[in-house]
Structures are given as structure tokens and as C-alpha cells.
Length: 404
Image (cartoon, rainbow, N blue to C red; front, side, top):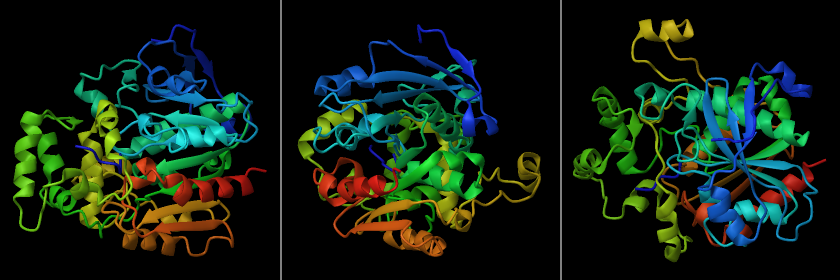
């Protein structure tokens, strides 16, 4: 099941960051890791690239794994700004590295002179640490993408800026676009750390999602049912997930004969011979609460914080009866944005993306760039063998324009 939405042995450094970062109320513990089982060792160094493993501890205690590719194959020091890559739902940073170096965005950016940083969301294989909780504790999984906005993204952006001394470019895919858009809409001081952002298969509005499988799962409150049964980590074991999928797939109009297509759309350009490599790394776990939050967006058509299900609980968390909205129209008009979306995408539907573009219609002239591919579905933007030509080349040109 693949869905693209998608112990340190060096002393930790406790630091409140200088410069712009000092105004943001996040304290990060950082360290370099020498673990043997890492993305650097398994996917980057094997391709002839230098790679560093970093650990970043966010303010709420989650310990995040970050990989850095500081130079390209030529060995020349990066001459361009840092770029932070944030993956989608049920995957990790490996997704940016699974094709050949000439086809994988992580390597392409490094070879084009950028200082590449690869994020891994809390709960994924290499980001399972916490200062006080075990990933076997149900409390470890009590989060949704609100926390990814508030804690993970904030910690990672500040860490990269601190280590490099520069503002950064950002690339998000699927859920990685949602957390960025939410953060941008809040107009916090974090936004001053970005040079630009590239959003691939952007998800914000989700009420027109064409994936019948995903839509049925949301309408049937599957994630809520799992949560009520005590399953805080998603996906649960196949003994639990199998009967649920069977139930969804038996709904009228739902075709599950090809699961990845049913979820993401008919991806045109993925190399099927890489499927085995993909399955070594994916799917990665997330919190069931995160799936509930996304399901709420599909059902309601809103872009809002997690709905706790009652006015009293919402008032307890937010001081109001309804969850606060993330208003996409509040995104600063001068922030350079690159949006790549596809005509076959069944998660980031073209009509939903157009609704987002309408929210951004007052963006400053030249600061909003669109790349549309009629044949692309959701996973093509990360795994497509021709993505370099279709998406990455214009994106790199966009970064170059905004790198000064």
C-alpha cells in the first residue's frame, strides 16, 4: 500500500538560534549521527555522493532524522542556497532518492550546486525517537499535521538556516505542501527564512478529490473507527487493514484492482523495475490522528486545524467552538511560489489546485509560477523517470532566479 500525499554519539548542542531565528520560540537539540542503518549509507553514499546524517530534536520532544548532501558528484562545494525537501504521507526521504541520480530530485539538486537537506517526518523509520516517549507508547502517536506545521517544519527550517547561515528554498510533495502552505498562511517569523517554495502535487482544498477509495475511507470514518479501537499508528497490521480495505472496495463505484492507481491516479512515468526498491522503504507509518485530520478536510472541504469532535473539546484546545481555519489568502503575496500539478492526479485534483490558485490570485506579478502536466498523476512528481525535464528543470530555473 503506497500513498504519496506520502543514538547520537556526539554531544547534543542546545541552542537558540541567532539572527532571524532568535525571534521564533523553538529550541532545538542537534547532533550528528554515526548510526549504521541510515539513508546516507543505503541510498546516497552508494551512488558516490557525500552525505551527512543529522538529528534534530523539536520543542515537543520528537527527534527527527535529516540527511544532508552538501556537494554533488563533482565534489565542488555547493555554490547555491540550501534546499529543504519534505516528503508526503506514508513515505520518507528515500522517495527523493530511489531513481537513478539523473532522475532523483535529491541528487539533481546537489549536482546543480544546491546544498540539499532531506527531512523525515516524525514516526517514519529514521525519525522514531523522542526525549521521553517510546514509539510503542500510544501517546507518541497523538499528533496530526498541525504538529508537523508547529513543530517539525519550524525545527527543520531553523536548523538548516543555523547550519548554513542562509535562507532556504523549500520543496514539498503532497502532505509536504500542505504543512508549508499552512505555515505560510500563519505569517509567522518563520516565513522570513524562506527564499521560495516549490509545491508538487499541492494539497490544500480536498473536497473534489477524485480517488474513490480515499473518498470512501473518509466518508466511512475508517480512521476514526481505528482510533476508537486503540490503533494510534497507521497503517495497522494487515490483519486489521485487510478487512477494512475489503469493506471499502466493495462499495459501489470503487475499483481496487490496482491499489496504487486507485489511490494516486494512473501514474504515467514510474519505472516498474524500481518497485522492489520502493517497497524496501515504503510504506512508512504515520499517526491515525493525522489520517483523521485529512479525512475531515475531505468531508468538509475546509482547511482547518484538527476538529476534536465537540464544541467543548475544541474550546479547550482553541478557545472557540470550531477549529481555527488556515486561510490561504493570507499567504504573503511577495513569497515566490512554484506549483506543479497533474491532470491525472487523484489526490491533488486539478480542480482543487485551481481553487488554491484562486486563493493566490493576488500574488505579486512573476512570483507565482505554474507547471501543469496533463499526463502526470500523484507519484510521478517524485518518481517519474522524466520528471527532471517536465518539472525539475523549470523548478531549478525558478530557484536560480530567486537565489540572490
